[in-house]
Length: 134
Image (cartoon, rainbow, N blue to C red; front, side, top):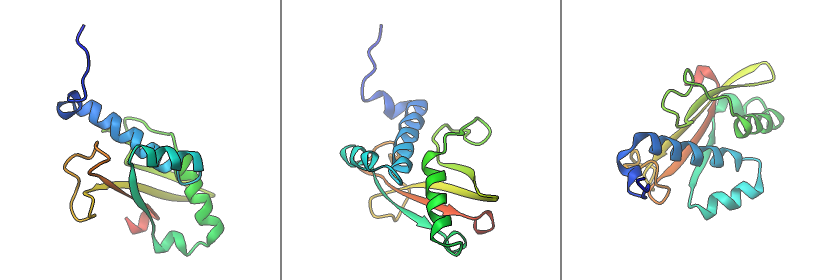
């Protein structure tokens, strides 16, 4: 039996997608869970959250509900998550559809991360938006 090594992720896109998905899930969970914030920091996962003007204009209560919806979203299928990395999904907040999207950048937020599965060289930008703003 072959033992999996840390280098396997370098050449295995399924392992990379699973790693990205786990990091994205923890990053989203940290929106509402202080324990997840601590765990995320311990793993070196970093980034920022962006709320678009369309979502912001709905008021603080709606924004809080949107953050909670994004943080707890687990509805991933092959149709809405074909790469298995949990980077883009639609959620409903009340009767309004929203998109959330995670982009994976280098540490300066200038270019896409060359190793998006590696939190030491990747910054996340989680954007919550109305479909009309996509």
